[in-house]
Length: 474
Image (tube, rainbow, N blue to C red; front, side, top):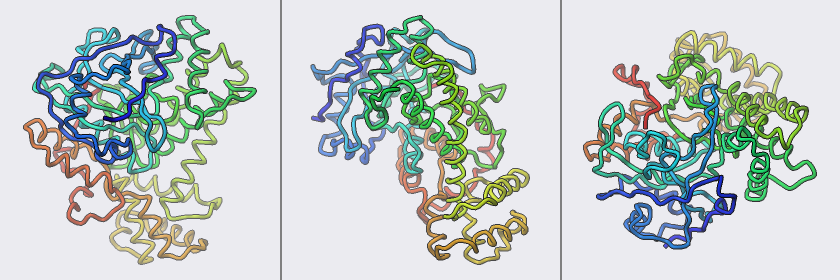
């Protein structure tokens, strides 16, 4: 049996959560399990049926105190006074090879925070979240990940009648910006302080008890958020719902809903068809990250002066810009930093936008120009003058060309999780065919490999998939 620990979160005052049993399924089945995660969690010798019994609630572990967490948040810029785990619960924590991790059940039934919902997730949304967690992890982007999907024959109604499912999710924490907002706006500064103290004590790899502990706490969150969003921009990832209740204090991507990896480069890309104003468009993500940090700063105003908040928030842009510039240099195969790099990078993005080039494939194919020092196929898409500047800039590098080509292929993925791929896996899974899901796991967890047998997944989406719309419903 895995060595689950009673989570420390339950030691906070009772206003922070509700102890919660959950609703398993009558006829549960494992849709997919993550063998890499099982190994990381030290569960590789635990039979999957044993885990199914535990997570479905058939086999009880007396020492556990599962709970649903309360929080609030700004949704599309508007404050919502109470949200909380409406369909999930913090099941436990576990010691892994990478430190302490939360085990969270998503779709586990009604909680006091469900409002009018049924507390269930659907197979469609759990597959999308499972796949994206693994895709992001393979791209070295901080993310929650899933251990398994539990399916059922229970039906729930969203836009249509769908199969209910449950996701067993892991993350370093499920404490959100909105966790602090809830107590701030309820005028409970003592609970804001208790939560900050809990975070500082629980995550020593991030926070430390210094003279200015709360300022340093906020500074780390701002830094991790800026770093995470720089990684999103570099790989063309659009989260879709950057509400403050979807922002982790440790800078992990989580609460995947209507996300999308951008295909044709378009800074105005909006992946959530409910986002009518384009608040969370791709180009706006860096600004929204700062806006959300500012909202968190306001929630911490009983601990941090407005002046200190302002100084810390001013660090965000430099961290974001420096991180993104370094990521883009690597994508262009450049090791040294030169003044002209910003112009070179922006020039490529401008060409990609005007020519409607595939973001992922364009970066991957830059190796052709560097390897051959001329590439008619590439030149037909990217202006010759830019390629000349690109090659001239490479002449100033000290690493060998072979080394630079190798490094480029280690940071520019050949494969990303395009929406149509997830959609095909979902449609097959809905008729009990999980072969596409298994195939995609091979592809998205090895995004930098050639994988010639799966070449088709490197192509742009087929025409029929151009208009796939993703909503928040799950």
